[in-house]
Amino acid sequence: MGIAIGDFHGDGMFELFVTHLTEETHTLWRQHERGRFQDVSASTEITRSRWRGTGFGTVAADFDNDGLLDIALANGRVAALARSTGSFWQPYQERSQLFRNTGRGAFRDISDANPALSGPGQVARGLAAVDLDNDGGVDLVLTQIAGPARVLRNVSPARGHWLRLKTFDAQRRRDAYGAEIRVQAGGKTWLTLVNPGQSYLSSIDPRAHVGLGDMTKVDRIEVRWPDGSREEFAGGPADREVVLQQGAGKSLTP
Image (cartoon, rainbow, N blue to C red; front, side):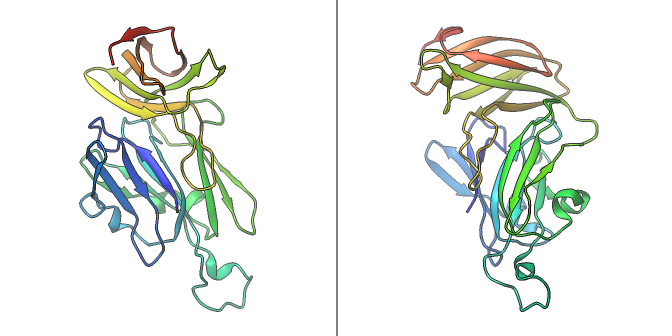
């Protein structure tokens, strides 16, 4: 039901995380060459979750800004698990989950350590990632059936440095959805995509967020715009928002 896009392995290729039913396992598809994907769910230990749920909304975000993309997903059944004497929706409730990227090609289920997201059972559906208070930590907004929307503020301790990027098409006077951004710092490269249309029945923050770990400055930023043109922008200090306007950077050959 839900799809999250990101470079989970830091190899410069986008990958897909797809949620499934409770009786199945969620799937991580790694792209080794453009358009060719391999199921790496087992090798990345996504299948070793503490419990299974019917996943709907899901996002790829660096919640602790260590430079690695983590995964959050909202769970809620579509068929009643059993008859219940409680509320009508109680048999459909499941706990949502959070997976931390270990940086060693695997993910660790840290749901139990995040009771605000994963403690109460709910019939969750939409999940959106956005830095609501602009403090450099990616927050979550979750919707559920028969319940109010929930706002989950990122209070992860000892977060790393970060950079928030807004791509703008001045000619059309709109955000440049579909732009691919590469951020380089200290010999490392982070790839991100400006695409709010992810997750499930949700729209995530159109500003790209990059966790930089212990990097305090960025060397350069490269953008491939939706029309295929490429530009380079100067780097600078971390922990801020940068607006990248098409036509304002140094043109690069395609």
